[in-house]
Image (cartoon, one colour):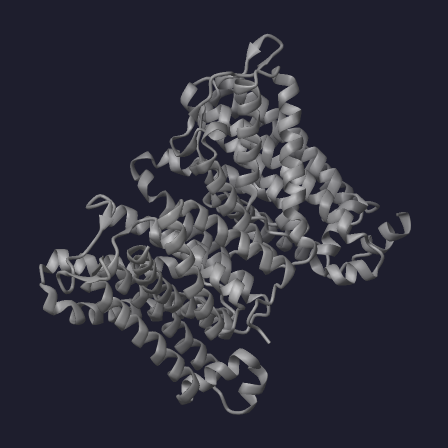
Length: 341
Length: 292
C-alpha cells in the first residue's frame, strides 16, 4: 500500500528510491539542526518542549486519529505520571529507575480505567466524559496538597541520571529525541500491522467492527494503554524540562493544545502530529512579547483548523499525492488482515 | 439553625435560578442545533464583565442598570449573530456536527477567556458592581441583601417567561418540535436553519442574561466562566439534553447543593459532587434522567 504507486513498475521503484533518499536527507538535516540548536541552553529548552509535544501529539494521534476516541483527559494522565514519579522519588525516596516504570505503568493503568466509559459511550459522549475526568483530575491535583504541593506547584529537586550523566539541558533534549524516534518507529509499525487496521475499523464504525469479529473491548483497551503510557512519558519529560510542576501545566488546555497539533498537522498520519508540534509548540517562545496572547492565538488556530484544514497539513498533502498517482485503489487491508488474524 | 436555613435558601435559590437560566441556554442549543456549546460559560462571563465595564467606564448610577443590561444584551446579540454567520452556519447539515461544534466552541472559549484576561484582567481581579438596591433585609435574624432579592425576582421572571414562551409561542413550539424530530418538523413547514439561528441567538442571550444577574448579586472573577461552563454541562447531562424543564430542576438542586456544601463544608467538595454525579449519569444513563 505504498502511496507512490505499485512497487513492480520502474516508475514506482524510482519514486520509492527518491522517497528514501529524501527521508535520509531530512533526517541528516534534522540531526544537524538539533545539534546546533541544543548547544544554546535556551534553544535547547525550546527544542525539548517541542520534542515533548511531538511525543504527546503522536500518542494522542493513536487515540484521536486512528482509534477515534478524543481523550480530553490526556493532559491529566500526563500530570498523573509526573506527580507519581515526583512523589515516589522525592517523598518515598525510591530508586529512580524503579520509580519510573511504576509511574508510567500507573499512567497506563489509569488511562485504561478512565477510558473504560468509551466502551459504553460513543464518540462525542466519550469526549464529554473525558472532559469531566480531566476536570476531576485537575481538581485532585489542586486539593491533594501532600501529594502534589497544591496550586502553587512544586520545584523538581531530583534529576534523573543515565550512564553517570545528569539528564539536564541538552542531554534531556537528546533523550527526548531518542524517545520520539523510537516511538515513531513503533507507532508506524503498529498502525501498519493488523492492529492498526482494527483500530481504524473501530474508529469508522465500532458496531460494524464488533460484528466483523473484532474484539472492540480489547483493541480499545490496548489503544488506551499505549496512548496513556505515551502521555505519561511526555508528562515526565515535560516536568524535567521545565523543572517545575503545577496543576495548571496539566489541565484541559494542555489536552486541547495537543489536539490542535494533531489536527493541524494531520490526523491519522504518522508525520502529521510531529509536523504540527514543530510548527506550533515553539510559537509562544518565539513570540515572547505576546505571551499573554497565547490562548487567543491557539484558540483561533483551533477554530481555523476546524474550518479550513479539517484533514491537517500532512493529510492534505498525502491526499493530493494519492489523487495524482492513482485513481481509485480498493482498500483490501481489512480483508487480508482479517484472514491473517 | 433558622438563620443558616435562611442563608442557604436565599443563596441556593438565587444561584440555582441563575444556573437554571444558563443551563436552559445550553440545553436549547444542544437540543435543537445539537451543539454542545462549551463557550456558554464565557458568554456568561461576557455578560457580567461588560455590565461591570459599562458601570466603570460610563460611571452611571443605579438608575441606569436596566438600560445598561439592555445594551449588554444587544452587544452580545451582535457578537452571537456574527459568530453564527462566520462559524456555525456552515455545519448545520453535517451529521458529525456535535463533535465539530464541541471543538469549535472550546476554541472559541479559549479565545474569549484569553481576551478577557488580556483586556480586563490587568484592571481588576474581581468584578463586583454597586448594589442595585442598597441595604439588607433581616429575615429571622439572618441578613439578606435587597440586591439579591431583586435578582431572585428577575431570575424567576426570566425562567417562567422562558418556559411559557417555549410552550405557547409559535417559534418556541417550532423549537420544541426540532428537539423531537428535525425531519418531521421540516416536513411540517419549519424553516430549520432559521430556527437554528434563532436558537443560537436565544441560547447565547440567556447565558449572557444569567451572567448579568450573577454580577448584580455576587462578585465575579475570570475563573467564573470556566466553572459555569462545567456546571451547566453537568446540569445538562444529568437532566438530559433536550429537556429544558429537567435542566432547570437539576440546576435548582445543584444550586442548593452548592449553597449547603459551601456553607457547611468545602466548596471543592461541591464541585467533586457535580463531577461524580455527571460521570455516574453518563455511564449508567447517558440519555439523562429527564428524557423520555
